[in-house]
Image (cartoon, rainbow, N blue to C red; front, side):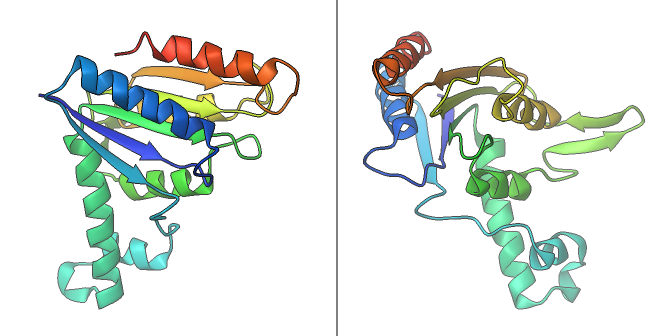
Length: 199
């Protein structure tokens, strides 16, 4: 049995393309792997606070010096990190907002990129500790950006996932969704076709 962790980050609900792709992924994966455990964390409905001094205190202070807020922040970070560590497969649903990922998804990364837990510093530099996991990134974009200098999503996500040791990453882009004409249908159909090959 494998554990699948899905991170939703779209601020939209009913009309979200990335959520449509997530639902397709879940349906396919359950059909192919009925014994697997799927956990969905929705950062839109349950946002994670941005990195602040309280969380930093929870990480850095000895247990007997943390105040109640710092201890609570540490427990939240531990929960999110433990979910990631336990997962065999990570799915990130990431619409493009202003050429990048949603701030809620960045906040999630800020909670789970933790020295000594998901990566460590060695003599040759940082080393990822989450070796052997797979990741799928489902994006939704109003324009067409893949492979261009305006695509700040894929390079960033490849970097941070690789930083923690996740190098087996598949990107599925639904692009041109706001360009009118046939672009919406074409972009969505291409993404769904590629996604159908995943499970």
